[in-house]
Image (tube, rainbow, N blue to C red; front, side):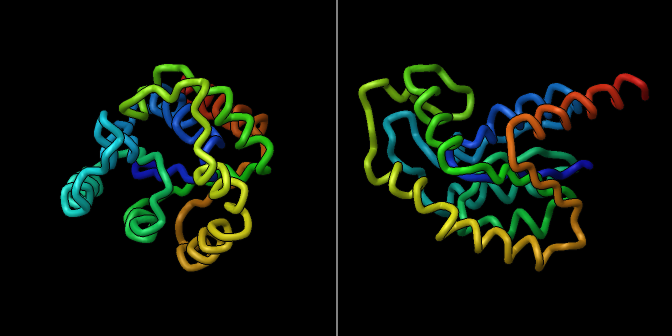
Length: 170
């Protein structure tokens, strides 16, 4: 496990999971949101985003946290491990609401508690219908990778505890 992507619906806790995985393994962590977005909520030019992502993929070890469907297959082809946080929509919506107003190391701005982006919430509500089937097809295509799917936060946390124990033993 040297090149890991962490994917899942927004609000599933990809960044939180990735930070814990980084702490346990020492593998460098890269948040795609920090590469894609500017502090003023504008997007970096696509070619800048792709160049930065490619420079990360070329490294020997990494954890890349984020979806970005247009680049997911490239990251999946380059990784050795896929971790998919496959949680119910309600869990993800709750995760989105809980992070509002908090400083995050994975995002270049703070989402205020009074902000509700209806378009974003609609996309999250449709994730299991629209995006999840695409992810599942990619997982079938790249079945030579180590694929770890968690369907609850408890499963993910148990895995992190197990991994931490294994790292301490070695």
